[in-house]
Image 1 (cartoon, rainbow, N blue to C red):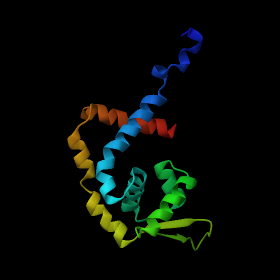
Image 2 (spheres, rainbow, N blue to C red):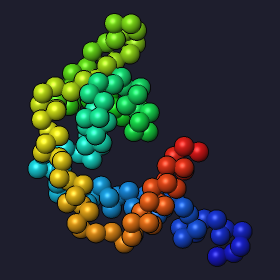
Image 3 (spheres, rainbow, N blue to C red):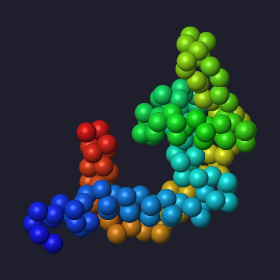
Image 4 (tube, rainbow, N blue to C red):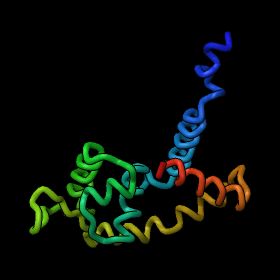
Length: 143
């Protein structure tokens, strides 16, 4: 390939290994989440809710780097399944407040061992490399 098109080589793209790693990580979570009826995206929504208990959709989207168009159907599904409630804010009707139900809080117990199980499977990174990658990925997200 001529020098003019080197920027189009897959091996020269930072986006590709990020994309491929993301898919690999989601696939690693699937055997643990599928029996609970959860997708990875639902799982990370719960992680925010288990920490905060109640958030508005904007805060949730900001924490997860997801837009309302992605979150709304997901939250509707979680509400239908009895994990969360969605209510309009009394201060501003445009704001939707999401809160865990007892069923949503109880799910935390079923998920508490998932990170440890994944850690047992190992990674190609040592602890220092993982910490560096974590820092760099968040720097990239904030940029």
